[in-house]
Length: 267
Ligand SMILES: N[C@@H](CCC[C@H](N)C(=O)O)C(=O)O
Image 1 (spheres, rainbow, N blue to C red):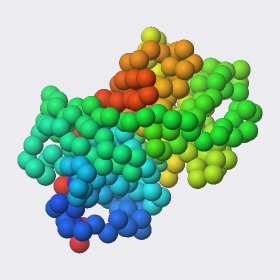
Image 2 (image 1 turned 60 degrees about the vertical axis):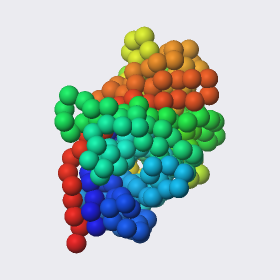
Image 3 (image 1 turned 45 degrees about the vertical axis):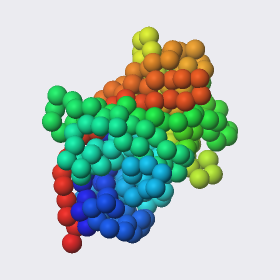
Image 4 (image 1 turned 180 degrees about the horizontal axis):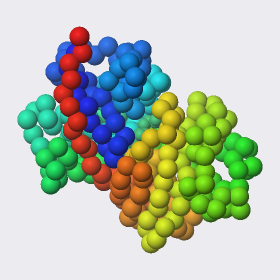
């Protein structure tokens, strides 16, 4: 099988294209094996890029633990880069069929030849899962949920028991909150650090701590706007780098990089 590895702000994905490989196995076990950082190639998830009659390419994602996710902001950009590279292109507009609908992405070359800057539609932002009671005991200033197809919990730091984000044991908090939600959720802690700017750290369903989460950034910006902290164009600073979220009335878009790492062949 031919794969390529990419990352969006340190959130890394393996991509397998049906156009290059023929019919895809879409196997959670294979995804789990290849994403293992000790015995596999290592990644936060594996994206199956299928042939689609609705769009240029179809998106299907298995997290590192083999569970399936509905969407990924960083993963979408990585798939767009893989699709363009397979056609010998370094920029262009690509439509992607996701489980939640078709999303358009516009990729432009960046100064680094391995990186594209991609503006991607993230679709409508809707209500997320019910906030579990355990969040009330954690002392965050605010808490809310949202969804762009996949579920997110957003916790605002600087509450009574939470002086700043660095004091949070996110692996513990994330696991506790995730376990209290049927089906799990991605859990993010955010802090407002300037006009239209948030700092965010993420615990991801099916992965654990990650360097960045694009769908999480989208929901965090949306929720922060409802809290009156930001306007319609929000910069999100994550451990892996910055992304920009553009918020409309009902829908959102995400701008960030996709960086090519390697082409790989599995036996
Ligand atoms: N990191 C991704 C989200 C990947 C899916 C997530 N772990 C889930 O299970 O919902 C992003 O950039 O959005």
